[in-house]
Image 1: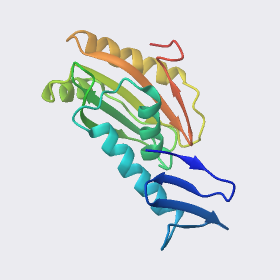
Image 2: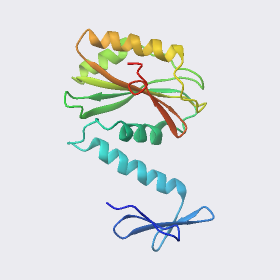
Image 3: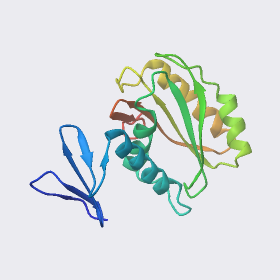
Length: 178
């Protein structure tokens, strides 16, 4: 797959698929498409990459991109858990808890219960901040510790906790908080 940026703002993403933008209208070779359709298509492609039978969640940027695409535009806080195999392959993405514009109640017991039901060996935690600020709050740090300690009791690893805020994200693992 090649990505080519030419002087006339055309982007060739896949063979035979050219997208160009003029005044907010995107077009392919023959048809006009909207930004939302491009984003929807990008979500489908990204989800296919991540749910491929052989896909491993070892690339933090790919996981962040997926989470940003899915949760950046939410108007309320969503706490999501990616349940993984021992080889870090995706078993399932589960939106565990939904809250308000500035918080969600998270119950480690429910995460543990779902992890056991899915026979997960590892998890990646994530939630969005509708405010767009990706800084980890004390509550975020506290719940991460509680979930990590709960899952450690039954040998399930917490690989990361990613906060999504608009088009940005913060990784606890990369930030040294895990």
